[in-house]
Every structure is written in C-alpha cells, then in structure tokens.
Amino acid sequence: MGIAFNGRAMKKSLLAALFLVLLLAAWLLYRQRSAPPEVAFARVSRGTLTSTVVTNGVVEPVEWAAAAAERAGVVRRLLVKRGATVRAGQVIAELDTEEAKADLNSAEARSEQARAELQLLEQGGRASDRAALAGEIAAARADLEAARSERDSVARLAGKQAAPRQELVEAERRVERVRIQLAELEKRMAALVDASDRAAAAARLRESESAAGRVKLALERAVVRAPIAGVVYQTDVHEGDAVQPGQVLARVGRTDRMRVRVYVDEPELGRVAVGMPVSITWDALQNRRWEGKVERMPSEISALGSRQVGEVACVVGNPGGELLPGANVNVEIRSSEAPGALSVPREALRQEDGAAGVFLLRDGRLEWRKVELGISSVTRVQVTAGLEEGDAVALPGDTALAPGAAVRPVFR
Image (tube, rainbow, N blue to C red):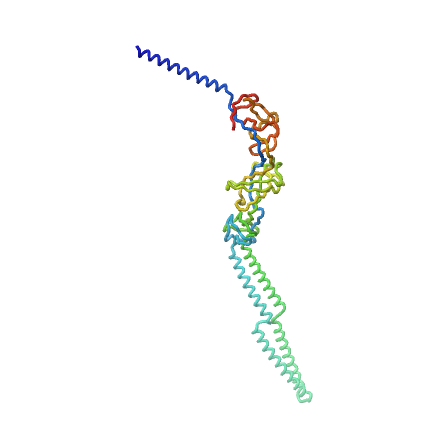
C-alpha cells in the first residue's frame, strides 16, 4: 500500500513539472510574438569624407613608339619578348634576306662588269686592237711617204721628157690610194672609242650601282630596330609570319610614367575635372598603389559593352616600372573632400515623396527625419542638415520600417 501511494505521488509531480514547462513555453512564445522586431542601426559619425569616382581603366606608356617593318618579308628571328628592356637602335627582329643577298651578288657582278668596260673604253679600246691598227697605220704612212717620193722622182723625169706622162699619172694614183688607205685606218683607230660608247658604258655602271644600293638598303631594312629606349610592351608577330611594309612588329615605351585610359560612366563625368588626384590599384600587385592626376577629359562618349563611357586620360608615376602596359586596373578619382563631415552609411538613406531621409531611433521607436546631403564616398554620404553626431539611423533588413514603429536596436 505504501508503494502504490508513492507511485501516485511521483506521477502527480511529473504532471505538475510538465505543466510548468508548457506554461513557460507559452509565455516565452507570447513574449516573442509581442516583442518589437530587431532592427540594425548605425551611428552618425564625424570625419573626413572623400568623394570618389570608382571605375576601371587600361594602362599604356605616356611615351611610346612602334617598331615597324620597312619592307615586305618573312620574320626569320624575333629577338625580344614582351616586357624586355631595350636600347634605342637595338635589334628587335630580322626578316629573311636570302633573296636580297642573291640580288646583291648579281647587282655587284653587273657593276664590276660595267666598270671594267668603261675603264677599257676610257683607255681607248682593247690593247690588241689598238696595237694591230697602229702597226697598219705606221706601214701605211711609210707606204705613203714612199709613194710620194716615187711620184716626185717621176715628175722630175717627166719634166725633162725622160719619163712618159702615163707613168706620172700612175704614180699620182698610187699616192692617192695609199692616202685613202691611211685615212681609213686612222678612222678605224678613232672609232675604237666613240663618245656614245663611253656614255652607254657609264650609264650601265650607274644603273648597276644603283641596283646594288637598293638591294643594300633592302638588306638594312630587313633589320627592325627599337625606335626608342624603353620596355617592349606589345609584340604583334611571331617567327615565320609574313609582314608588309609599315606593319607594326612591336611597341616600345618608357615605363617611368604611365597613362591610364579610365572609363568613366557618362552620368559620373560631371564629377571629374582635370587635375583631380587619382589612385590606381592592380589585382596582380594587391599591396601596391600608384598616384597621379587627371590629365585630359574625353572628347566623346562611346560604347563599352553595355556602358556609355568617356575615356578620361590620367598620368601616374611608375618609378619602379612595376605597373605594366596593357594592365587592367582599378581606378579611384578623388573628386572632392570634406574634413570633419557628418556622414551616414549609404544604405541608411531612403527616399520619401522625393525627399531624402532616414529612420531615426527615438525612445525605442522609429522617427522619419528629412536630411540634406553633401558629397558621398563609395560607402558613406555626408549629411549637412537634419542629424547630429551620435544619432542612430536604421539600416535596411528583413523588417519593414514605418514611422512610430517600436524596434529593438542592434548596433553595427
């Protein structure tokens, strides 16, 4: 009987405990449902606020020049790679020269032949021809002298009636024949070197030397050199590629100062002006920052993907040469600065009936407060009127906010 009594008492105790637990749970559930919602808040703070235009850009040298082919050909050797430092005049590439070398050998052979011909003509012709004619002329002159001597003798005899008249006529004819023969030989001697022959030979020499000069120039142009000292930041060909005159093989630039083509969205261009400070970061070197200024505003708006942008030119210092041409970089243009400015997070701002404002915390409830705004940074906006330092403003979340609503503030 004692055992039965103890069992009933224990059962009553368990039922009482379970009732208390259920009552506590119901009370907690009621309190949770009736308690104000949690809302995140941030404090109005004072400090220096910098207004920035954040965008992207591409790096290129301020001073650069293109190394281009001066004649057509095939790239036989490419002697530099992108990023190589070169001197002004250093060989960058060589084009194939086998055909040009063969042309040069042919032109030089023609020049030697033309030079020898001209020298021969200037000396009066071939020595053997001149010697043979000179011998014949000497013999003819001797024959003429003998014929004249014989004619004179016959003439004296004929004057004394000691020789017939016909013999004198024959003597005169011999003199004339020998004289004509001598004149023909002398004419042949003079014809060995005619002025027109010398002119033609000189012209052939000039033409062959000119051809050789053109081929030598083509050989010189087969070597492509760096136009300036700097860094090769772009190569446009490979070994074995065929190139045409004027085609760019590489671009060389100085890297101590770099120009950045900054793509600023059209609505933001009004915040940018020449001389504004610029900061550049590059994802490849995350701990480095390059400083510079806006150098030139855009002259037109162009499409960049789905964006309408103006290309703002900025110049930054690059003394270590770490910022490479062609790099895609992050850009911040500091358009204005407000020391000691009151500011709130951007996300705290709301628009009601066309006016900017915030939800302010007052005695556990929300109060709508219109504000006047100044400059803004990427994360914060300056408030010039409507708030005081230390005020708490609501941040957006899952709970719908309304003036007068009770809230439980959670500060971030």
